[in-house]
Length: 270
Image 1: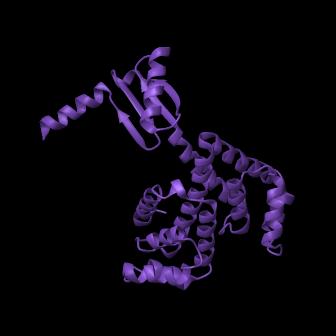
Image 2 (image 1 turned 120 degrees about the vertical axis):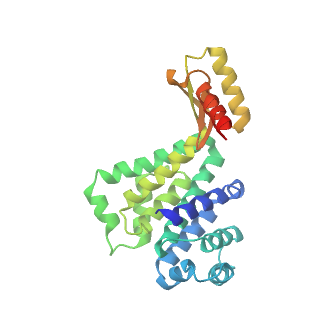
């Protein structure tokens, strides 16, 4: 996914953050179910991604499709995607799949913090390892004659202690891999988990090693700033020319001398 579709997905994920505090696994399941509906109806995909159609028209189509069948939050999420711009008809389904997985991952995070994300990642990796090492399991999960229920039951037996969020993502990968192998789709979900975990890690670059007191003050300050217990990874980087650089997820706090000099030069040149 690239270009305008990538921009629309980025905007959708940013908007989703405001809903995640009260999101549920039921919402994730509803969104995954809507992906299945879109995949089965090429005409609907084209209608929802047609640039000639207005936003009101597209929102109306979503309402006809989903109103009363899914939660209001799920319906509004799909409507928001439908009123965005997409480079191809398939992209809206791919984006919705990513949004649905993100909801499940965020629920695991809300319920267990960084430990919840670690458990989710471990569950998915456990499934990937078991299936990846057995051709018989791969054939069983790919068998077009086997029912979705049978495949899902088999899949969950492979990770018997999986969390609810893990079980949902595993069932989705097995029931609706969307042209991929189930393991390949779960690897994509693992990438989303890893990206979410970055929100709990502060990558700190400094010019020289911090004392234990400085590290403790930095830890307390960052925890207070972000409202969570962050893990701090400290890297020594003499090229910083003094100061400190902190990266948490996609956010960078740069207080190095080099950065200040560059900002001063830009101000003088303007």
